[in-house]
Length: 398
Image (cartoon, rainbow, N blue to C red; front, top):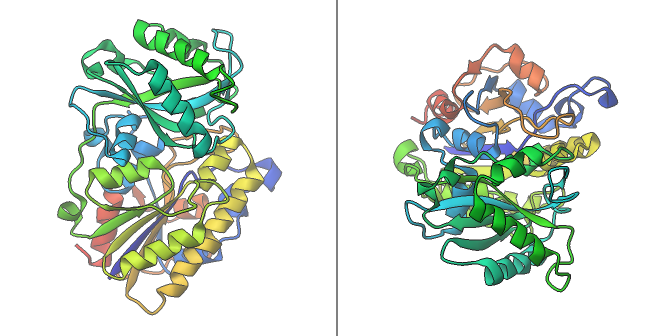
């Protein structure tokens, strides 16, 4: 049997007046997810433990069946695993955004956590210039994708910097940065590095983008996860545009499939992801297909774009996979990692709606897939990391 695990990042949300009181899931055109819901089982799962922040790193680790409370060390270490960086156990790995602030002072505001979704070909030379001018025995800059980069603080896990709580920039869009600068000021070396980096970014011969400062956050020691196949008995792969999913795959010895043209936005290469999933399943058991678009639209506060992102997920990912596999023995898990409501423009810790469709699943008979319909079934998993094992047992695959 083949198992497909389809994730629309940030798909969940809350009712909006501009959508006639509907959520973006309810407003989207999703006939394929609706059919899977009607002929399968629906419920909700708490992917983010109550003691942890509602990030995609925490939530997707849970969806892959690993308890974040046990294995999560930070956002930066997951993305370092995606790049295969060789790290020492005492290194502190920071996620490093290129961001736009109104000004880098205590009365400044976070204007854009992504610097206008800066393109990778634009951001990479900037990060390389930062390494050339500021890299040293303490700090190393590593280019990543778009606005998402890494800063390794060698030996930093042994310092007080490991405990600094700096806000994820997408959590403070259009909000003051004063409290985070005060936190940053507790580390003189990191404080100097950020302001020296601003001077580099102010050089228009190096940087012509909207980015005007760096933002280190999500730090932790290197990530170690159990082997996925040894844990779940499945030969699996992850497909995503974002490094955090690739990092979870690398750390658990799954196959990581890169798809040309996968952007994490509305213009991503949907067909390429579908083709890659089908190719992998010719010889293997399990594929985790992740789409970032709904989350990015949620952060942008654009309800109609988020409705479109969810509709495209249904039409361009779920539909062609169902058609291609209609005559094969398959099982499906469809969900999101967390909510990214339009009003909040950031992640929340609501329990996510999910569909299980395959052997052992009694049809729900409910015609639509949404937050409310999933909640109406009464099926609730308080530990989201148990969803995969729960599904495997129901499908008879464990």
